[in-house]
Image (cartoon, rainbow, N blue to C red; front, top):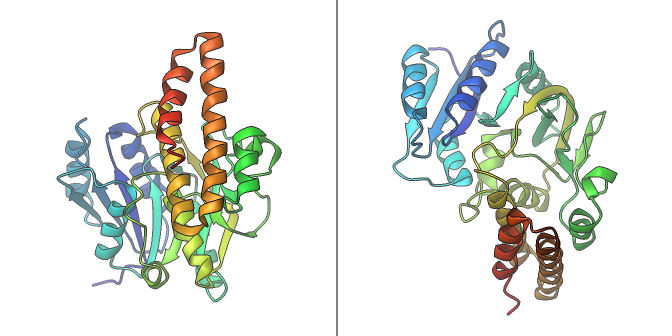
Length: 298
């Protein structure tokens, strides 16, 4: 029996066509590759016919394993499940809304293997559907970085997330595409399962850095990332980002820093709410009304 060189973990939740496109792009990308790979798909109890599609794929391909969860356990916990089942020490986390371009997986894997003495976690270059750059390399969320993200369009000016043109050591890369080794992932106890969705990779790579591990961004391996495909609109992601930032600060920062974070989040919510009332924008009123209530100052 051939050893598995690479275990690819994909989490599925109500994104039938998108997940199918993702799987097809993985298979196409590795069609002529010498890499012996497996795909572990973990479905978080989809109710949109995703399971029927996934069962067909797991029956058709011997290297696709389907795990059917009986509840939606979230992103981090499902990925932890996948790592436990993985037959390879090399793990590639791919979001279900990723389209692999050309031989991107092979490029990422080979580069990691050639440089694994200095690289612990490696992210690829993400592109939007129209092939424009998607910022996916970033500094950790210190208070100045959060201020830039909330109030200064930090991504636009490259103050927060960016998309480097050359290989770069960075604080964190998008969880939509991360390659690592099982031993590094397990050393820091994997994803924190208390984070249901969003900020999970930031927390993971923050702990990796604290343990002396190094994170790099590799621009030669390119992937399209559709973004927020299973989130159901814009409101949910924004609320989860608010939640994620507060969780991250409660876990890793001082009470004073957490207090300052909450002031910024309250202010952001107030601005969004005010604009919503002035323009009579239902989405802004609903989203930032909920966000304002979510931030408890006590």
